[in-house]
Length: 126
Image (cartoon, rainbow, N blue to C red; front, side, top):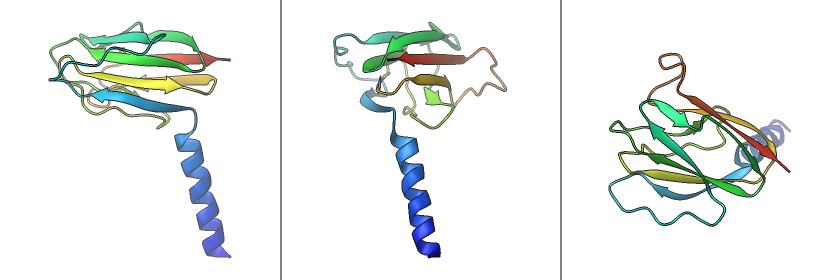
């Protein structure tokens, strides 16, 4: 009985963690990124900011983060929904949002407690 509960909780946690979206086209940098899919919305990472910092998109939209600054960065969901590799100069990370909701994020290398303005939010509508 205990094992069944543990397995059920684990399956639920995996479903919650993996629902809502999917990463596509990671490019940590140093190589030419592939063209973004049609309808992709772009976010630039530069000078310890995400620009735009807030987006509102429809479900099914892909967001592409591109690091245009001299420092390495990531895009990391506050809720564990996605986490890019470290993006060097020119690096990109695409993520397709499939579920409505509000998705706050940050750079894991430069956390909000040290860089309070280095945060972003994606709001996904139906």
